[in-house]
Image (cartoon, rainbow, N blue to C red; front, side, top):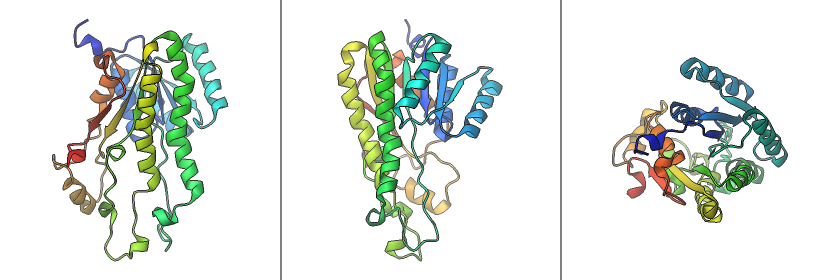
Length: 276
């Protein structure tokens, strides 16, 4: 097989968790463009329907959308049955992409994003989706891959799974230290944890034909305020954030036979930020 053919995903079946979000949709595009069949897990029914219609319009291909709470094993088992009934097989590819984007009260004098104010229930919620959910999905579908001696698990980490967040990026003039926003502790813990989960799975099922890698992207430009953009680009050797489509080729590489000898690795793609 030549190098180009290694990127083809025809006859592959892929699950993307949190696939109705901003980058999740781009992961879907990458796999559809390589001719894979795609299943999307999310808990937002409206967003699921929107992404299904989008794929029909753009690619003339139907994806399977399922409202699944990935923190609940019984829902994952039911989804597994639905998938097998439809495709007569289990997925060959799993992209653990789901995460919670935390929302905090902006007008409160007690800034709950700060470590000293961070609430246990928020910690438990975000860890349950971003880390426990990835473990449960890997357990549920990775086991079937191992029985079939073929599969790829890709965990979506972050450059902040490799380095610590620079809290100076979020500092705003006119606010006391207690009021300043910070990148919450859960983000770092989850993204670092996903890299640890990657290494565990990569060695656990290596003899069963299942590869597991992590992808550590930098921030994507999404109409950020000019002051934030100036501060963050000063931390990046390439002097810019990523474009929205810029990660698609990496997702395809990591999910296809193009990366057939890559296992337990973390692919950093952050414009060089983690090098400084």
